[in-house]
Length: 207
Image (cartoon, rainbow, N blue to C red; front, side):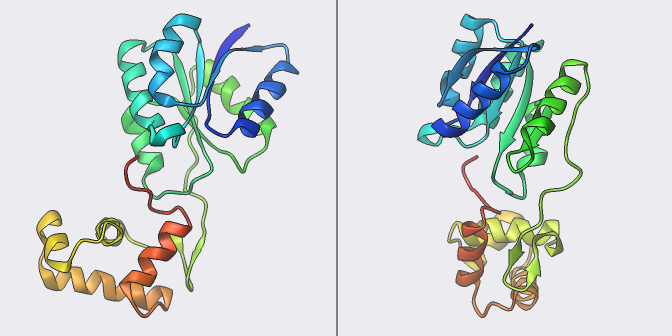
């Protein structure tokens, strides 16, 4: 039986996962915690084979950072990143952290189980794309990588000058990217655009 550790800050979601795994015969929950900062220590203690790791956990602790530490210290432990957030960069960051697989919470429990099975068989299971959401009149997939880089800094409240310096591009290029995004979304200010992408969880800085 595969020993599973759950790292999830929402009690109801955590309980639902525990109950679903308990209903089967292949997986046993050996630890269930809410804070990713504790994950490595608890994993060492309980001897988990597989971790279901939420990305945004209690006290703003990053599951991505925890996954990276665990894969470095305990490379044989399988990790499936889980999230309900459609943040632009989470898929790429999960791969960079060394996570084996990735699952969005809007999928079914059966789909999660299939991802777990395939992960334990040695596969790396990732969605092809981030789920689409609307930002004003634009689909999230319509933003370019360069626009997203600019938008992250807009969300942080940086000025055009600071954005240009951070990204090593011209002031005019920054204005051009922001103008394009405003045209796509039909917003009349970059502040409204920043509020919208934050509310839709498309940009979550700090993780």
